[in-house]
Length: 121
Image (tube, rainbow, N blue to C red; front, side, top):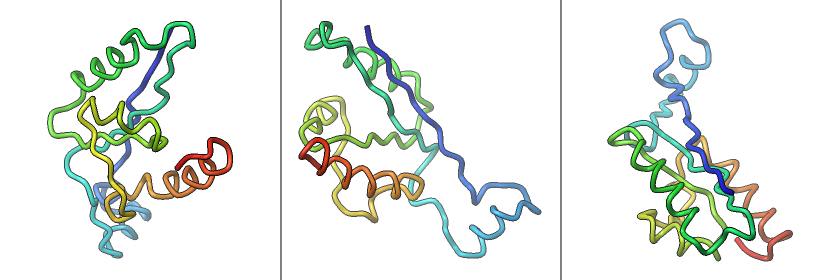
């Protein structure tokens, strides 16, 4: 009927000494621009015939309840679906600097695709 997932992102700056990518990230001073563990709420899908019954809300609320305390949880969404996410406690961020670095490319590409396919942002 529906599914959703929390996708974790690694802090590259936390990689062990000797790890080349971790060393580059630390040398460049690219400290994470988020707090705690970074998780992306992804793939929230409810079958057409089961929508508007609270199933998506229950799925997401269950995931949020199970998320580690202090985690930063992000969702990349169309502008027209933003109010649903806001009701679940998410905040809309508009500035690119507010988007966690691991999600910046996906957010930029998503804006272009949303404009073309969904006539949204």
